Length: 331
Ligand SMILES: [Zn+2]
Image 1 (cartoon, rainbow, N blue to C red):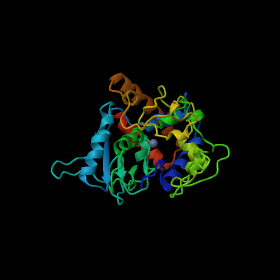
Image 2: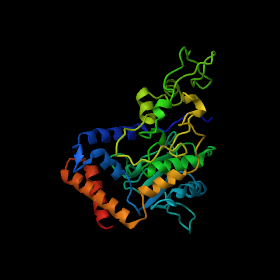
Image 3: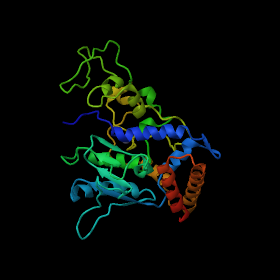
Image 4: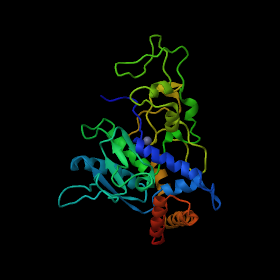
């Protein structure tokens, strides 16, 4: 059975570490040099332009791995990153990681055995304070028993997160907050279908987003709905272009979720391919231009040096920033 509104959610242990990171970051000095901390964190979540990202699989066969690799590679055609899936000509197999690993086998580690689809954002994928070497950084739950219809769009969406992109419907000035039907229609009588999912009542009154996502299969408390759907803070930390309803990073939402149904500017059919703005955004985040690359590298070096020299970081983060700084010195 495919649920219609099953959204991404991290496993509890990863979510707890992400929240610990956020709490920790809030206690750092709010300025790093001239720059806000949020900007620094977002910048450091991006991989380095020109970087070759290694990717490995745990579970699944080479035919499935090839489908995922061929699909995800579309991103790298539009920006200055390379994907290395570790394909071995001799064996016909792709790189694998395992739950016994004590060192990261790859920057992005794909698994299939957790519920749902999700990916860590950017360099969090190999941030030892967030995820262990023996854990997936990206998950395609259920892919081993059969590919869902929109699997290619799902792969592109999760790789978008892995490259550091956030949700388009949470665009800081996208305005989707005002379009969403957060609350039940007046007089709504809670009604569920055979799976326990909330549906319109006998009078045609409709449940709101909080009610639907609070029920099966998501069972999200209100804060989790807000975390996944509300607009991001309007901060210069996020590199944004104009709101793009065609973005692969925008969830498909049923028309019932919007006050104005299909005429809402945040409504779109399911997006299954990269939009023109997705491609342009990737090119800006990971440019080919030598001068732009040098600027990004310099900026990162300054941020890393400042953070490392402050000696206020968790040991794992301190170490990972030191390693990244060393690798940037070599560029
Ligand atoms: Zn997502």
